[in-house]
Image 1 (cartoon, rainbow, N blue to C red):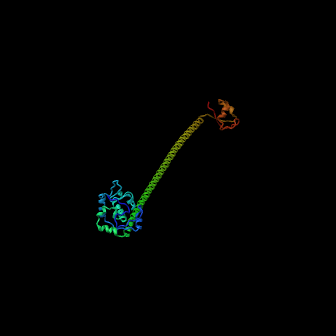
Image 2: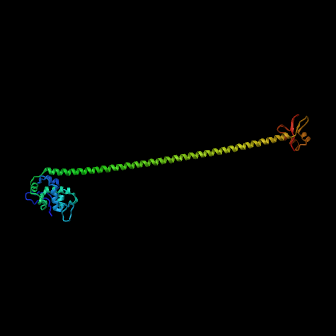
Image 3: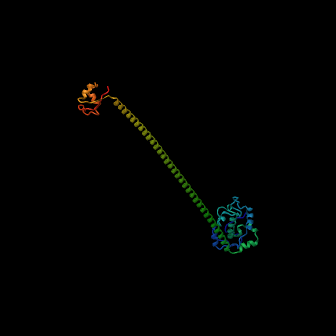
Length: 295
Protein backbone atom coordinates (compact mmCIF):
# COMPACT_ATOMS: atom_id res chain seq x y z
CA UNK A 1 0.00 0.00 0.00
CA UNK A 2 1.47 3.38 -0.99
CA UNK A 3 1.41 6.29 1.40
CA UNK A 4 0.60 9.65 -0.30
CA UNK A 5 2.11 12.46 1.75
CA UNK A 6 1.25 15.83 0.21
CA UNK A 7 4.19 17.81 -1.26
CA UNK A 8 6.84 15.13 -0.42
CA UNK A 9 8.64 13.53 -3.41
CA UNK A 10 10.80 10.39 -3.30
CA UNK A 11 12.28 11.14 -6.73
CA UNK A 12 15.67 12.86 -6.64
CA UNK A 13 15.15 14.79 -9.89
CA UNK A 14 11.94 16.53 -8.66
CA UNK A 15 12.03 19.84 -6.75
CA UNK A 16 10.10 19.75 -3.49
CA UNK A 17 7.49 22.58 -3.27
CA UNK A 18 7.62 24.64 -0.13
CA UNK A 19 3.88 25.41 0.39
CA UNK A 20 1.25 24.80 3.05
CA UNK A 21 -0.47 21.42 3.24
CA UNK A 22 -3.98 22.93 2.90
CA UNK A 23 -3.16 24.69 -0.39
CA UNK A 24 -5.86 24.62 -3.11
CA UNK A 25 -5.39 24.10 -6.85
CA UNK A 26 -5.48 27.85 -7.58
CA UNK A 27 -2.68 28.40 -5.09
CA UNK A 28 -0.66 25.64 -6.65
CA UNK A 29 -1.10 27.16 -10.10
CA UNK A 30 0.18 30.51 -8.88
CA UNK A 31 3.45 28.97 -7.65
CA UNK A 32 6.02 27.67 -10.15
CA UNK A 33 5.70 23.91 -9.58
CA UNK A 34 7.18 21.38 -11.92
CA UNK A 35 4.45 19.37 -13.65
CA UNK A 36 4.11 16.87 -16.45
CA UNK A 37 3.86 18.20 -19.97
CA UNK A 38 0.80 16.06 -20.63
CA UNK A 39 -1.68 14.17 -18.49
CA UNK A 40 -1.35 10.47 -17.85
CA UNK A 41 -3.88 8.33 -19.67
CA UNK A 42 -6.85 6.75 -17.95
CA UNK A 43 -5.19 3.39 -18.56
CA UNK A 44 -2.23 4.57 -16.46
CA UNK A 45 -4.54 5.54 -13.58
CA UNK A 46 -6.41 2.26 -13.93
CA UNK A 47 -3.10 0.44 -13.62
CA UNK A 48 -2.17 2.38 -10.47
CA UNK A 49 -5.67 1.85 -9.03
CA UNK A 50 -5.43 -1.86 -9.73
CA UNK A 51 -2.14 -1.93 -7.84
CA UNK A 52 -3.45 0.23 -4.98
CA UNK A 53 -7.01 -1.12 -4.53
CA UNK A 54 -7.68 -3.71 -7.24
CA UNK A 55 -9.67 -1.01 -9.02
CA UNK A 56 -12.14 -0.61 -6.15
CA UNK A 57 -12.85 3.11 -6.43
CA UNK A 58 -15.26 3.12 -3.45
CA UNK A 59 -13.01 1.26 -1.04
CA UNK A 60 -12.64 2.36 2.58
CA UNK A 61 -11.00 -0.24 4.79
CA UNK A 62 -10.56 2.07 7.77
CA UNK A 63 -6.75 2.27 7.46
CA UNK A 64 -6.70 5.99 6.62
CA UNK A 65 -6.50 5.53 2.83
CA UNK A 66 -9.54 6.00 0.62
CA UNK A 67 -10.73 5.30 -2.89
CA UNK A 68 -9.22 3.60 -5.91
CA UNK A 69 -5.97 5.63 -5.71
CA UNK A 70 -5.76 5.41 -1.90
CA UNK A 71 -5.73 9.10 -1.01
CA UNK A 72 -5.12 10.22 2.53
CA UNK A 73 -7.79 12.69 3.65
CA UNK A 74 -5.21 15.50 3.95
CA UNK A 75 -3.92 14.83 0.40
CA UNK A 76 -7.47 14.79 -0.94
CA UNK A 77 -8.40 18.04 0.78
CA UNK A 78 -5.10 19.60 -0.24
CA UNK A 79 -6.03 19.32 -3.93
CA UNK A 80 -9.57 20.64 -3.38
CA UNK A 81 -11.41 17.38 -2.86
CA UNK A 82 -14.73 17.53 -1.01
CA UNK A 83 -15.97 14.93 1.45
CA UNK A 84 -14.12 11.59 1.34
CA UNK A 85 -12.26 10.27 -1.70
CA UNK A 86 -14.09 6.93 -1.83
CA UNK A 87 -17.41 8.79 -2.00
CA UNK A 88 -16.37 10.63 -5.19
CA UNK A 89 -16.69 9.32 -8.72
CA UNK A 90 -13.80 7.64 -10.53
CA UNK A 91 -13.45 10.69 -12.78
CA UNK A 92 -13.28 13.00 -9.76
CA UNK A 93 -10.65 10.82 -8.08
CA UNK A 94 -8.53 10.81 -11.25
CA UNK A 95 -8.94 14.59 -11.56
CA UNK A 96 -7.65 15.11 -8.00
CA UNK A 97 -4.90 12.54 -8.55
CA UNK A 98 -3.68 14.51 -11.57
CA UNK A 99 -3.51 17.62 -9.39
CA UNK A 100 -1.60 15.71 -6.72
CA UNK A 101 0.70 14.24 -9.35
CA UNK A 102 1.31 17.76 -10.67
CA UNK A 103 2.44 18.77 -7.18
CA UNK A 104 4.32 15.66 -6.01
CA UNK A 105 5.04 13.61 -9.08
CA UNK A 106 4.67 9.86 -9.17
CA UNK A 107 6.32 9.69 -5.76
CA UNK A 108 2.85 9.99 -4.26
CA UNK A 109 2.47 6.36 -5.39
CA UNK A 110 6.11 5.17 -5.09
CA UNK A 111 5.50 1.42 -5.41
CA UNK A 112 2.52 1.25 -7.75
CA UNK A 113 3.86 3.98 -10.05
CA UNK A 114 7.18 2.16 -10.33
CA UNK A 115 5.68 -0.04 -13.02
CA UNK A 116 5.30 2.92 -15.36
CA UNK A 117 7.74 3.08 -18.28
CA UNK A 118 10.81 5.17 -17.83
CA UNK A 119 9.66 7.33 -20.71
CA UNK A 120 6.40 8.07 -18.84
CA UNK A 121 8.30 8.86 -15.65
CA UNK A 122 10.88 11.06 -17.42
CA UNK A 123 8.22 12.92 -19.36
CA UNK A 124 6.20 13.37 -16.19
CA UNK A 125 9.03 14.58 -13.92
CA UNK A 126 11.35 16.51 -16.25
CA UNK A 127 8.99 18.96 -17.94
CA UNK A 128 8.36 22.45 -16.60
CA UNK A 129 4.97 23.68 -15.41
CA UNK A 130 2.39 23.32 -18.14
CA UNK A 131 0.25 26.42 -18.05
CA UNK A 132 -2.07 24.85 -20.56
CA UNK A 133 -2.72 21.89 -18.23
CA UNK A 134 -3.48 24.15 -15.28
CA UNK A 135 -5.71 26.34 -17.44
CA UNK A 136 -7.48 23.25 -18.72
CA UNK A 137 -8.13 22.08 -15.16
CA UNK A 138 -9.33 25.54 -14.24
CA UNK A 139 -11.56 25.69 -17.29
CA UNK A 140 -12.95 22.28 -16.42
CA UNK A 141 -13.63 23.39 -12.86
CA UNK A 142 -15.20 26.60 -14.14
CA UNK A 143 -17.30 24.64 -16.62
CA UNK A 144 -18.44 22.30 -13.87
CA UNK A 145 -19.25 25.28 -11.67
CA UNK A 146 -21.14 26.97 -14.51
CA UNK A 147 -23.00 23.75 -15.24
CA UNK A 148 -23.90 23.39 -11.58
CA UNK A 149 -25.07 27.00 -11.43
CA UNK A 150 -27.05 26.55 -14.64
CA UNK A 151 -28.64 23.39 -13.26
CA UNK A 152 -29.46 25.22 -10.02
CA UNK A 153 -30.91 28.13 -12.00
CA UNK A 154 -32.99 25.73 -14.11
CA UNK A 155 -34.15 23.98 -10.96
CA UNK A 156 -35.05 27.31 -9.37
CA UNK A 157 -36.85 28.40 -12.55
CA UNK A 158 -38.72 25.11 -12.68
CA UNK A 159 -39.71 25.43 -9.03
CA UNK A 160 -40.77 29.02 -9.58
CA UNK A 161 -42.77 28.02 -12.66
CA UNK A 162 -44.36 25.19 -10.68
CA UNK A 163 -45.18 27.60 -7.85
CA UNK A 164 -46.68 30.08 -10.31
CA UNK A 165 -48.64 27.29 -11.96
CA UNK A 166 -49.89 26.10 -8.57
CA UNK A 167 -50.80 29.68 -7.62
CA UNK A 168 -52.60 30.16 -10.94
CA UNK A 169 -54.48 26.90 -10.50
CA UNK A 170 -55.37 27.83 -6.93
CA UNK A 171 -56.56 31.28 -8.07
CA UNK A 172 -58.58 29.67 -10.87
CA UNK A 173 -60.10 27.21 -8.41
CA UNK A 174 -60.97 30.05 -6.03
CA UNK A 175 -62.47 32.04 -8.92
CA UNK A 176 -64.48 29.02 -10.04
CA UNK A 177 -65.66 28.44 -6.47
CA UNK A 178 -66.62 32.12 -6.13
CA UNK A 179 -68.51 32.03 -9.43
CA UNK A 180 -70.26 28.82 -8.42
CA UNK A 181 -71.21 30.34 -5.07
CA UNK A 182 -72.46 33.48 -6.81
CA UNK A 183 -74.49 31.37 -9.25
CA UNK A 184 -75.98 29.38 -6.38
CA UNK A 185 -76.79 32.60 -4.52
CA UNK A 186 -78.41 34.08 -7.63
CA UNK A 187 -80.40 30.88 -8.19
CA UNK A 188 -81.54 30.91 -4.55
CA UNK A 189 -82.57 34.56 -4.81
CA UNK A 190 -84.39 33.86 -8.09
CA UNK A 191 -86.20 30.91 -6.52
CA UNK A 192 -87.13 33.04 -3.50
CA UNK A 193 -88.42 35.81 -5.76
CA UNK A 194 -90.46 33.35 -7.83
CA UNK A 195 -91.78 31.74 -4.65
CA UNK A 196 -92.77 35.13 -3.25
CA UNK A 197 -94.44 36.05 -6.57
CA UNK A 198 -96.34 32.75 -6.60
CA UNK A 199 -97.47 33.28 -3.02
CA UNK A 200 -98.51 36.83 -3.84
CA UNK A 201 -100.45 35.65 -6.89
CA UNK A 202 -102.11 32.94 -4.78
CA UNK A 203 -103.03 35.50 -2.13
CA UNK A 204 -104.45 37.84 -4.77
CA UNK A 205 -106.47 35.01 -6.29
CA UNK A 206 -107.78 34.04 -2.86
CA UNK A 207 -108.65 37.67 -2.12
CA UNK A 208 -110.38 37.98 -5.50
CA UNK A 209 -112.38 34.82 -4.82
CA UNK A 210 -113.31 36.04 -1.35
CA UNK A 211 -114.33 39.43 -2.71
CA UNK A 212 -116.37 37.77 -5.48
CA UNK A 213 -118.04 35.48 -2.95
CA UNK A 214 -118.79 38.42 -0.67
CA UNK A 215 -120.15 40.43 -3.59
CA UNK A 216 -122.27 37.50 -4.70
CA UNK A 217 -123.57 37.01 -1.18
CA UNK A 218 -124.32 40.72 -0.90
CA UNK A 219 -126.09 40.64 -4.25
CA UNK A 220 -128.13 37.64 -3.16
CA UNK A 221 -128.96 39.33 0.11
CA UNK A 222 -129.93 42.54 -1.66
CA UNK A 223 -132.05 40.60 -4.12
CA UNK A 224 -133.71 38.79 -1.25
CA UNK A 225 -134.32 42.07 0.53
CA UNK A 226 -135.75 43.55 -2.62
CA UNK A 227 -137.96 40.54 -3.11
CA UNK A 228 -139.07 40.76 0.51
CA UNK A 229 -139.75 44.48 0.19
CA UNK A 230 -141.64 43.90 -3.01
CA UNK A 231 -143.60 41.15 -1.41
CA UNK A 232 -144.33 43.36 1.58
CA UNK A 233 -145.37 46.21 -0.67
CA UNK A 234 -147.57 43.88 -2.69
CA UNK A 235 -149.11 42.54 0.48
CA UNK A 236 -149.70 46.00 1.77
CA UNK A 237 -151.10 47.01 -1.58
CA UNK A 238 -153.41 44.01 -1.48
CA UNK A 239 -154.53 44.96 1.97
CA UNK A 240 -155.20 48.48 0.82
CA UNK A 241 -157.02 47.21 -2.23
CA UNK A 242 -159.17 44.97 -0.08
CA UNK A 243 -159.85 47.70 2.54
CA UNK A 244 -163.31 49.32 2.67
CA UNK A 245 -163.40 52.97 1.71
CA UNK A 246 -165.89 55.73 2.30
CA UNK A 247 -166.42 59.10 0.58
CA UNK A 248 -166.78 62.28 2.60
CA UNK A 249 -170.11 64.09 2.18
CA UNK A 250 -171.16 67.45 3.27
CA UNK A 251 -171.47 67.71 7.01
CA UNK A 252 -169.15 64.69 7.68
CA UNK A 253 -166.33 64.69 10.20
CA UNK A 254 -163.93 62.04 11.33
CA UNK A 255 -165.85 61.66 14.58
CA UNK A 256 -169.21 61.34 12.77
CA UNK A 257 -167.86 58.89 10.19
CA UNK A 258 -166.17 56.76 12.88
CA UNK A 259 -169.39 56.57 14.84
CA UNK A 260 -171.44 55.87 11.72
CA UNK A 261 -169.25 53.00 10.57
CA UNK A 262 -168.51 51.77 14.11
CA UNK A 263 -164.77 52.15 13.67
CA UNK A 264 -162.96 50.49 16.51
CA UNK A 265 -160.83 53.10 18.15
CA UNK A 266 -163.09 55.91 17.01
CA UNK A 267 -162.05 58.91 14.99
CA UNK A 268 -158.43 58.53 16.17
CA UNK A 269 -158.10 55.15 14.51
CA UNK A 270 -159.80 56.55 11.39
CA UNK A 271 -157.31 59.40 11.32
CA UNK A 272 -154.34 57.07 11.78
CA UNK A 273 -155.49 54.97 8.86
CA UNK A 274 -155.67 57.99 6.59
CA UNK A 275 -152.70 60.10 7.73
CA UNK A 276 -151.21 59.95 4.25
CA UNK A 277 -154.16 61.91 2.85
CA UNK A 278 -155.45 63.74 5.94
CA UNK A 279 -153.01 66.25 7.34
CA UNK A 280 -155.39 67.79 9.89
CA UNK A 281 -157.94 65.64 11.76
CA UNK A 282 -160.31 68.63 11.93
CA UNK A 283 -160.26 69.27 8.19
CA UNK A 284 -161.62 66.74 5.67
CA UNK A 285 -163.07 67.63 2.31
CA UNK A 286 -166.30 66.65 0.50
CA UNK A 287 -165.51 63.88 -2.01
CA UNK A 288 -162.33 62.81 -0.19
CA UNK A 289 -161.96 59.00 -0.04
CA UNK A 290 -161.09 57.59 3.34
CA UNK A 291 -160.06 54.06 4.30
CA UNK A 292 -161.83 52.37 7.12
CA UNK A 293 -159.40 50.59 9.48
CA UNK A 294 -159.57 46.81 9.55
CA UNK A 295 -160.95 45.37 12.70
